[in-house]
Image (cartoon, rainbow, N blue to C red; front, side, top):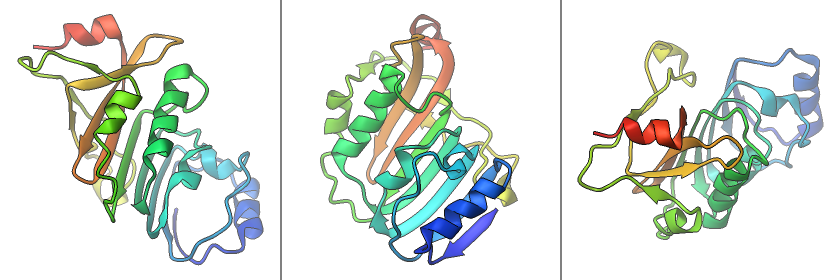
Length: 193
């Protein structure tokens, strides 16, 4: 599903999702600021969401997400919100189904992105070793439905406390990527060459 426009009427927007089956994919272009959706909205259950909101901050779209893949292009994203997102995943409090996350920040006043790795308790693969490359079948773009997500090749990773599964985390100039491996930390480290 592709939606573009003014979503100021959140009640009707939310009602649309409540009356629909859980969707596989949504591409959403947001042109005006809107009130947050109900945290229980079926919108957040969508398997894959790509949101283009270049004029706005991004956290409201991510906090309650329960699907597998989310991409967000936004104007600003607070470092504290990224830290909270990863820490909620690590603790098992949120994002249990998340496989892939990509956030691109248009106005990169977030010069502190690299501090995030310290704040989330990232672990590191030895710098002399080649980290494994994380990709999954991308679900954001119907024109490229057989392609994979942008590769995550990072020495940094985090571990979920409840099941010891690993996610690679990568910070580039204006983006943050997160890719879950179906591997425990021990299994993940065996893939390092």
